[in-house]
View 1 (cartoon, rainbow over the protein chains, first blue to last red):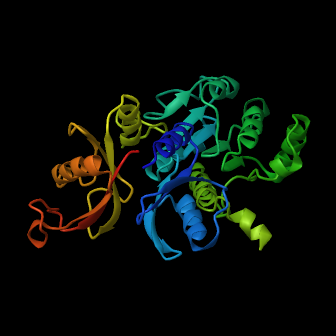
View 2 (cartoon, chains in turn yellow, brown):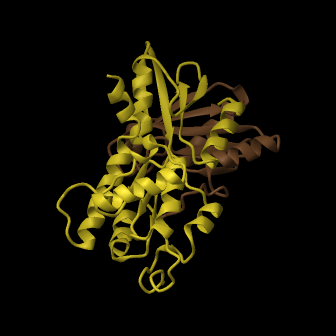
View 3 (cartoon, rainbow over the protein chains, first blue to last red):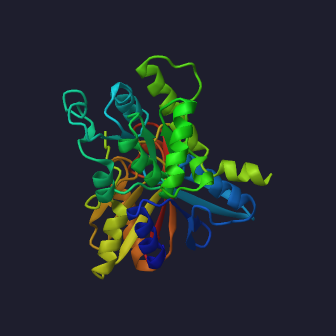
Length: 234
Length: 112
């Protein structure tokens, strides 16, 4: 392995950015491919697949054998709002492989009794996100119904290119939210990325069912990263 | 269940390998590149080895690490990468094997 390649790979991993290490098993040469880099042909298709699934494997391409080692940051789910939905969402998401952090400045809601074994911050999103910024391997679900708490986090999620951004509320509520986010300086194309009403349309009625819908939508967003863009080109 | 979203720098093999390199040590990196059947560690797992035989990480959960470390010494010396294959003990030339019945292919290369 090339020492510079190792150094670069570790930098990417520390910064929670995805990278695929491509090693030619014939001559040992290696290089780093970052998400979004263009690689042509069968090798490029296999690399795209590695980014999407996170699976490492050997591939035959151009008459050579390459090993693709996919280094994907661990996805996480940040939930704004220590509400009933979040109580169901936190354990489900953790089981599915998406560790959860819950942020809610309302100390009556954000209590360890209501949220055992969950990373819980009884603080304003502004303060928590300053310490632990959002990134493209983070999903954000805003479920407080309170613009004072949700709006800043939603804008921050759009700016950080979170792979999933969802917001609880009816279409009417969301229309008002769109106006507020525009006023905060978000672009219309950014705002269009928000899933609202939140969750896959499975007819969810109870808080736990809404949690299932949100988790399913989060997983779908994670596993189809980059595919929307390609669909638009085709 | 490990739930940290950040690298565990003290235990991460590739971070340790970089640290060894900065300390001027000769280092080999072993990587699981293929598995068949039940294999204890997934494809992409690393074992890193220095010239004194210190190692971190794992490619098999303990079954074949000893043999990989021995091979890694040769790889550090020659600079020539090797592909190793391990199956159940009685089916291979190795004195070690995978008791789980799986087979793994491990690529061993020198750092630099």
